[in-house]
Length: 170
Length: 236
Image (cartoon, rainbow over all chains, first blue to last red; front, side, top):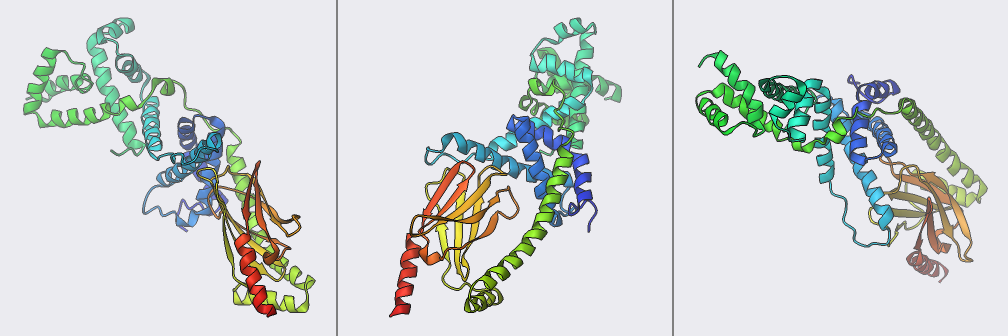
């Protein structure tokens, strides 16, 4: 059995310890509900266990594999949820996969922004997300404007490194 | 171009990637980029990071990441343990079930049951039942096979909430329902359940599935007709 296999309960426990926080964080972001996210994460690990023999670390990481399973779980769950209020409606559109990919991207970038240094995140929030002038933020923080500029630079660099670590690929 | 001057330019590359350099500074930087491949590569790389920023929402990332409840791991372990256990039990019960029903029926029927098991073939034509007018995303289907003990039912369900209890009945000629037992639907894995009802397939008028609060009914009209002609052939 290859290492990292999920065919036994120990393998599942180890995988859970390593990846559950990320999977849960993303599931909450994607489903917008902590209760449903719990259900989705539980279902992901149960399916992973059932299909444990099919996991091949030569092909991809365990994390990638778990996210692929979670993707299917979230789509099933969204579909089941979409069904409920529209039982009578005929020919309702299948929920598309696209919102999932969008949610995954959003979650990855948000998670990366959480992980960079506080000072870097702060200047990106103030100057980019709130659109404030560099000079104004510099004055508020009591630093030269050049410092704001360099923090923006190092912040973007840090973001790039974290995204690479998280396995983000364009 | 000294690395010292590159260092100064580079600290402007973040603001440049986000379109926040003043006109004069931007033009000067672009002149530098024309002649400096290293800074150009860095600028391109930062620009692709910058294009990701609009996807994030500060309302989310300014909050700490939500963490799963402390007992979720043990709940998952318990679910897996229970499933492992019930898989073993189901296999055992299936063997036992066929044996018992064979004993309860006549000797001929018992022989037939053994034949059916051994040969892997049904005692008659199997029937595929499709449930119609289901809510979108929900699939319910069944395959019915006549057996010596009644009818074997293979239920396929998908698209309903995981954990939903499904109870299956067959309606007989007098309108009475014969229970075929139930199962709990779980996402993924094997989504079919094998059930049995002590009602001959030829006499069944409908297959009824209660899934949670919903009820799905599939008439077995075709089945009856088919079985009737079959019976007529036998009697003539």
